[in-house]
Length: 562
Image (tube, rainbow, N blue to C red; front, side, top):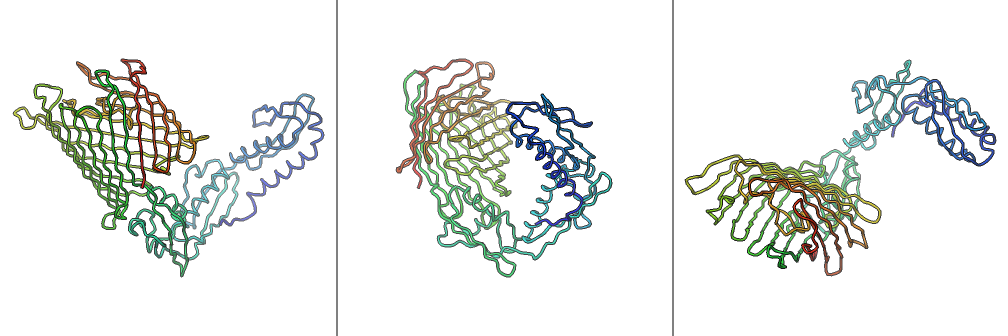
């Protein structure tokens, strides 16, 4: 609550609004005798003449227009702005106004000592009622979030010529703190996880903002759902009781794809994914992905994320990847990382990454036996409201790694060089009429003085750049964008249209070349009692080729959540 003196500042505004009301009532019959359009002019020695078309029989529209002009001037510091007269002429209406003097912020103090300096609320800046109210709301909320939920903000204003000095004082009231955080009924998650995720811990200052965000914070995990919340106050301490239910987030999914190989024959590709969440009630994630994208070629990934180990903000990250490209080469990646919860839906990971690439094509200079030891950072920010079927929010992930690269291991020609790679992915979900708009960018870069093909980025297919064969694009660097509109047909079922477009730095006979690629298609996700069935159809082209329906790609997927 904000208490303030009632003199000075409010005198100007209330008086001028009352005068405007009297003028409009008195002159209404003369202003609007018949129904047609007529120009309205505002003028005085400070405001440029402006023209607005309105319907002549609506005094409400003229009243609204005058109030809008008045509010804009008051917001710029012209607190005594007023309408002196309104004159009806044969072909126009003249509104004569007086802008008056402009007022500015003077000294702003808090509790007699703290100088206030927030945004555009600075001494010498034009006085803004909206800005002043925003500052007061922020000041009061900051104090309430420090354990004083019953705090009051008092305000005293003083005019000195064209300056308005403001003095704020707080009545904080009693100090409150959180007592305990408890789960009522089923306990689907550990108490330590909840305390770190929500920020509510015994002895911490009472913060109403944390309570207001509890539903979104817990539901955003994807595997928990907050059913009810209650707060019990006792002796300046608050006990928070939560009733939490498990949300089905474990999943098994499979994708069947049809593509055309180099011999123009139809080939079947496949992908299987297991995603296990919160098996041990610690909020951990275990993911296993396997993909067959061509004859004698496959990709296997295993991922583990364990947050808040030993009841600390730290967590563990581990990842194993095995990639085999027919008989050309095989890549093995081992990654370990330390997770740090930064709060506000953001986390940081410090990583160590070992890569071993081997080839049996010893006579081919495009493929080299190599070994990398890289150290890096990874950051993730996630405000997506529903991980299974998001409708709003932002997901951003970026990583950079650098370290030593050893070429031609186990040979006399081995040598070391600096190896650096960076990746980023940004997705923005926006609620739009009848559905959701998905905007996405994916970018990657690899830097090394003698880069072999088996160290290039590999992408393409249903989960990346669509309309091309799985893992068919080799690129040293790329950046592509996705625009996808999802039309909801019921619950979590939707049909969608999409387009992908981007730039790819791809290897050619002599040197790399920048290739522009485009893709477009449509699909459907249909949720049933047995699971979610998805079907997608995509076409793609590039700088070297046009759209060809014979190269279309069809993917059929199935996901079961449990």
